[in-house]
Image (cartoon, rainbow, N blue to C red):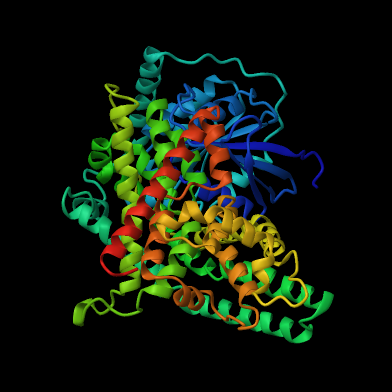
Length: 630
C-alpha cells in the first residue's frame, strides 16, 4: 500500500437504472459477495478492489432510491447506511452518488439531499458517452462549482471509463465516525430542492431539440397498447421455446456424463454385502439423484440469460408499463410486474424485490401470488414429464415448423402460472382488501442500452453458482435421506419382492397413498412429494433415487423412460397440474415470513397453494380419465 493512503469504505448510491450496479461490477469484478443487512431481508451487495494508488477499497452497492425520505424497505436501508444508522454496517467514509448523465433532473435532487446529510460526497456522471452521443452537453466544471462537490465522468461499461473516479477516490481522505445531522424534508422541502436542481440543470446542461431518434422509434412500437403486448407475448414465447431448443445439447452432454459415471461406479463395486450397499448409495443415491437435477442447469441458465438481457436492454420497465392496466384490473400494482417476472427465475428474489412497492397492501398481494409464477425449480419437473409424455415434434409445417410441441406445452404451463397469479390476486382483492384502492403507477423508463457481455457473464455465473450450491447442500442432503429410506432395512433372507418394498420409504408411501390415490398418484410420487417441500426440484431427484433403487436389477438408464412405462397419461397431467400450484419450498416460506413480519401470511400462502394444487390435480386426473387417457 502507498504511504499515506488508508483503506476506504465507499457506498454507491443513486436513482434506479442509473448504471450503479454496472459500475459496481466493473470496479469489483468477481470480488463481491451477496448477503442480507442485519435484521432485515434487503439484499446487501459488497465487494472490494485495489485502487491504482494502492488503496484497498470496500465498496457497498446500495439499493436505488429517488430520495432519502424513505418509504419502501429498500429506501429505508439506503437512508440508514448513508446516515450511519444501519445496525451492523460501519458508516461509509465516502458516498459516491451515481447520476445518469442522460437524465440528470432527479439525480441532481438526490445529490442535494445527500449534500445536506453532511457526508463526504463525490458525484459520478455515468453513461457520459451515451449523453455525448445524443448531443447532450454537460458543463462538468460548472456543475462541480454550483454543487460545491467534486464531479467526475464515468462510462461503467468501457475499459478506462472509471479512471477519473479511481483518481478521485485515491485523493479522498477517510471521514470521521461522527453521525450525520439530517432531518427528512417535507413536501415543501422537496419542492424547494427540486427547484434548485432545475436551476442547476438549466445552467449546466444543454439538450438537443428532439429526443434520441432510436429511442423514439422503438418506444413507438414497443409501448403501443396493442402491438406492444403482442411483442411482449412473442418475447416470452421465444424464451420458453429456447429453454428447450437451446439447452438440449448441453443437457444431453451432462446426462451422458452422469450415466457414464454411474456405470463406472457400478462396474467397480460388487452388488452383494456391504460393498453392494456402498454401490447402491453412490450409484442410486448420489449419482442418480443429484444428476437428475444438475442435468437441467442449461435450461435454467437459458431462462436467466433472457431475463438479464431484458433488464440490460431496458425492456423490463417497458414491459411493466404495458402490463399495468392488466395487473391493475387483477388488483396488483404496476410495479408488481418486475417482482413477478423475477419469480420466473426464483420466487425468493421476486418476493424480496417487492420492497420497491410503497403500499404494504400492494406489496403483500404481490408476495402472496409470486410463488405461483413458474420458477426455475419447476423446470426439472416440467421438462421430465413433458420429455417423457409429449412427442418431440413441430406443431405445424412451413413457417411454423420451428415451433415445437414440447415448447408449446411448456409455454402453456407458464401461462397457467401467470393466469393463476392474476386470478388469485383478483380474489384476494375482493375478499381481503375490498374497497382499498391500488396506488397509481409511476415509472421512469430507462434509456435503451446494448447489453454488455461482461455483465451477462457475471450474472449467469452468480446464478449458476447459486444453483450448484443448492444442489450441493439441500438437494444432496435430501438425496442421502431418500436413499437411506429407500434402502433400509434390507430385505430378509429369501425375500421375493423388490428390495424397496421392505424399506421405510415404502411404508411412508403406503401411508400417504390413500390421500393421493384420487388424484392418480402412486406411493413413489408420495415419497417424492414430501422432501420436495424442501425444494421443488428435489421431487425429480427423489423419483430418480426411488426408481433407481427399485429397478436396480433392470439398470434403468433414464428416469423419463421409467415414468413413461409406469404412469398413465392422466397421472402425468395431474402431476403437472399439481406443480403449477405446488406449495413453495421451505426457503420461500421463510422469506415470506420475514418479509411480512410473522407466520400468519406464511401459513396462509402454504395452505391456499396446497388446496389449489390438490383440486387442480384432482380435476385434471378425473377429467383425463373421463376422456379415456387414464
